[in-house]
Image (cartoon, rainbow over all chains, first blue to last red; front, side, top):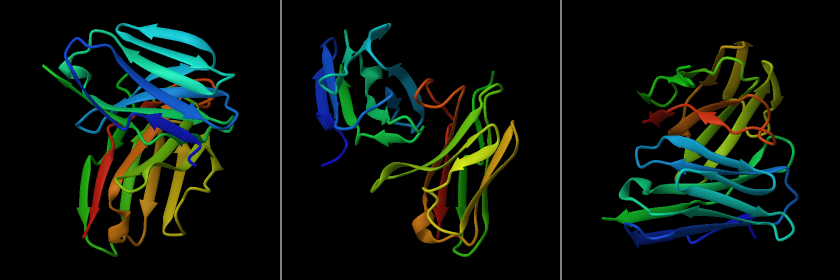
Length: 108
Length: 115
């Protein structure tokens, strides 16, 4: 079993829908990262969480340390949100363990 | 700041040739990471530096790979000799502190094709 599991693997939704991507992990962590990889290949860090919730624009990330689970939400989704969203955890040694990614397609 | 700068963006070379990838991290970032991304294996950490010192190179595939950071503003990843299985996108990323405390800023990546 992978130490970091993301779901769903693929997600297609209509513009405007509320999107949730989940990440579960099985190890102790010092932080969890959410990143976005654009179709062109560039990788952008969205959030780093060690507890609670963070919000940036239409993106919200939450983490439950006890349940070893994090979610990334996108409100009022837009076609430009189409990308691969990746969860990664740091076990305290700056070696990120990467999830397999969730490929999101938002249709107009 | 211009962000993390990588060069070249694309490299096509023949098996056996030496490849050098370059990275300029964000000024003031003490950590620099080299990652490799392939369809089969996803993102893999190759090596990371803290204050120019290699901290963990356990992800470096074999002796054909080497990385240096001679100063705070420059790092290289060298493959000699290159093989077709080295074809991948190589990302450099930097952060102010380790990934337990700070987000990463990625370069645009260097796409390597070894024929």
